[in-house]
Image 1 (tube, one colour):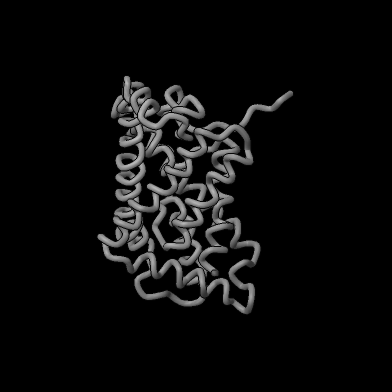
Image 2: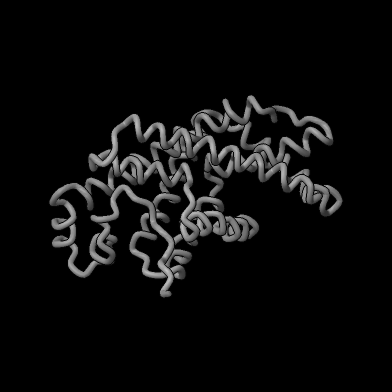
Length: 242
């Protein structure tokens, strides 16, 4: 039950990204691969965009940890919040390469499917509902999200540094044992297994019409929201009626 509640709360992050029009590395894995496959961008431009978004996501995550450290969050409940943060971060740095990689694959499949569902949305409420179930599922199942870990691991490193080091929890372990395999898994899961697959089904010339004819009346993004025009782009905030 705790994991389900945590997953429900975690949805706020992607809701803010999608509705407010921010950029997330894991979401750009799908949109950039689709744009590349569609010939809208080249490989150097895609890699440059990924590098910039990844670096700024990391900077923002670490800055948020620093900001929250001043609020006394880790001292709540007699220090239990801080100890839990250390335990979460330590567990993430103790994963094997294969575990972190495969959890990263499945995680970003769910994240990018949530974003893909948003392409068919007509309102903010639609977007929130489309995000809720896939994101709750990935958090409840314990899958690995590179950008989330950019916050969660430093959030454990800080109280660990203040109250004594935890075995295996270091900045080096964060980058080598977690972020490296998780990031590669996120790229494969979101970029290839969702982005490229959905581009082949719905965005490749002629494929969208064939898919629609094969499933008349379906609620697919191509049938319900002209996804063909959205391939390689990110879902944008709804326009104001004013």
